[in-house]
Image (cartoon, rainbow, N blue to C red; front, top):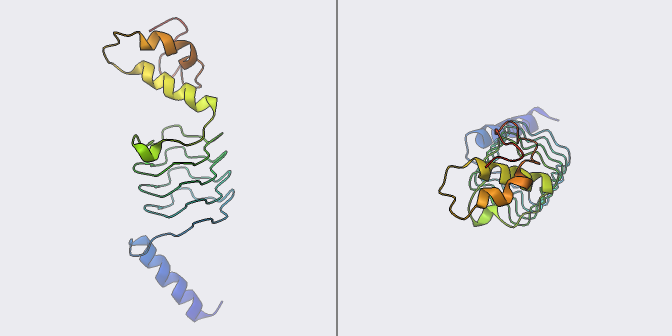
Length: 158
């Protein structure tokens, strides 16, 4: 690589770090990529292959992940606020301590039963008027979560 090419890469990197340019990784092959702590705010990662990628502490705020393959990816502590996950495959992904978006873009993604158990466990910890017995209905599934003990859930409690 010539010194002029290095200068261009460094200039582009400086602009990316300052937010002047965005990341366009549509359909990119980022399988098993190490993207820990990456600033991927507003990134276009639509239909990207992120299977098994390391995304711990990554900032994916407002990223477009529609149709992306994140099977087995590690999203521990990742920021997913405002991220569009429609059609994304999150089966086997680690989402512990991540910020999952609660809007229409945070729906219709593929997940596994482990993740459903985790969501149900968190619902059982909410303080709300449970006049309909929701917690009692979902508790048998919530206690199957890998975080049930951490959340203080027991087999026959409500």
